[in-house]
Image (cartoon, rainbow, N blue to C red; front, side):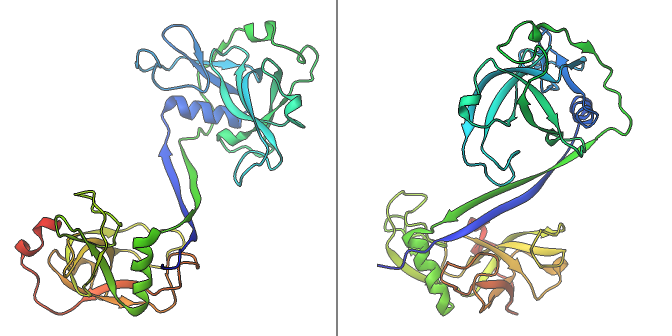
Length: 334
């Protein structure tokens, strides 16, 4: 039985978006220690504000200012905070209906333990010392120990919101939110054999016993027929570019100068194209039908952590110098 391979992997990218007038006012308001909501068509005050009515889907822009304190409507204790969460010590995730609002805002509550949290308790915003116009300008919520604030919800939530024009100096017009997923990957039996074969500069696929197609990388089952695939087939090493794209945005932690080309490559003998970078040729000369061959790296998987056997993989593919493949020979793989 082949060795079971595992490796810690990270998928990370910055998500950048522009803001419309409602979200811009909301985030700029947080920077100024002001919480804004929006009035829906049925008169409810929605916080955080939405750009469209949650019932009618009509555009709404009637902004109002709500209070900085509110009532916990429900909660869950988080005993083991993860990287990037609002607090480094155990805390409660809470939904808080701010005074003057009709909907609840999700955030963290700094509390000494779950016994100190309850539905109906009064809380208030703890503002971040440095505010930039993001939801993190609310550092967290904390129990409201101000006069009249402690205890169960009462008349506090009946406060009427005040109209607000949403105008601030130097408004926030866009945000960049980092997205990251940490996980442990186990490739399974089929892909473990595939990775281990790379140590010998071989690329293997598996043939479907029903449709006879060869899939690379192997999945252990035919994606078309749904039957198990056991027969291993060596393919390549040469192949044909079926389609490609030119990358003009430099990826974080990837030491490749832009522009460069990423392509789908149909290895000889395979019935499924894999993707890889094309090198050894100017990016504007890459074309469909270009015949290519692998250039191997010997220092392990270049863009993956250790733990996957340290197998070499093709760093990129380069032109072989052969005549371009006829379109009919690869059109089914485009």
